[in-house]
Image (tube, rainbow, N blue to C red; front, top):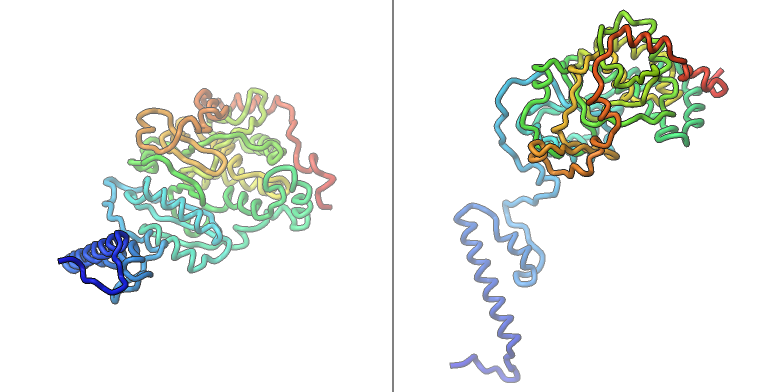
Length: 423
């Protein structure tokens, strides 16, 4: 018995094929629906999305179901148990704008995957404006760890008392084409804040340790131990990953003022330090610095009488605004002046990238936990990184001798730019 005969209708192989596909799709749909009923899940809608032409076009919502957005997928919970061991009184600290939400979400996502979903340290996020609800929701979707939000006041995010807005505007105009951020006022506010203000903020001042994070950075390696605890247990106060050279024109008078501060405050300096990492045998600054967008620090360093004195001296010297002194050279010079080599640590095992440079460990054991290419790592080509490995501590007497005997070729700001300084 063949198929029924319909006048004017002649079945073809194509029609038979279509009929078989439709029947198969219906059978699969019924099977999946029955399975979802037994398992308490919603599988039919997703099947409809995959077979729109067979099951009637666009997917229709099912009563009681919810639509999952791209942002909601970040809310898939992870229930990693906390890593064993004690924790220090520390936090991850970021200075961030509302417009940098996507970049910070990316950074925190990688940081959580590599470290903090197990160690569960809080985040402290600071902004010169109030954080928007969109920003808070976006961060809440990416981490289950505690997040503390803070706003900067005009003493933290503002001018040095020694400069004027008018004088700063003149210098921004002068320097806008001389180097990156040469004409940026907000960048100067940021550098001053990171140099000597962030650790005074109410959300940071009670912390013993901090780990700086930033938007749009990448962490390449699993970190299966606590760097804070490692540093504390080994007497380390400053940790870094990348050590480049600073742009000379951004810090034209920084070493001049540092030398003057050293001469006036040698009693605040330790008997030995790693100052010869930043100072050559000619007594001048070699521009080496720790790239402070990644730094892990025992905050007693920045709260010390010596560091506070050094920062106040620099703040009075106008260079944060009339030049473009960055927090990286300021932190690095201070750490080298105030710490011995054993108190500074290169975290070679932490693969890290900030836009512009990256570090990827080439040691086989370290690299086994990473997803990066050591051949692209800047650190193994860096003269400053090589110097860090080679130099040892210098006695204070020798340092003072070199400084006193060297010529002051780094002139003060007033000497180098007097014709542009405000009256």
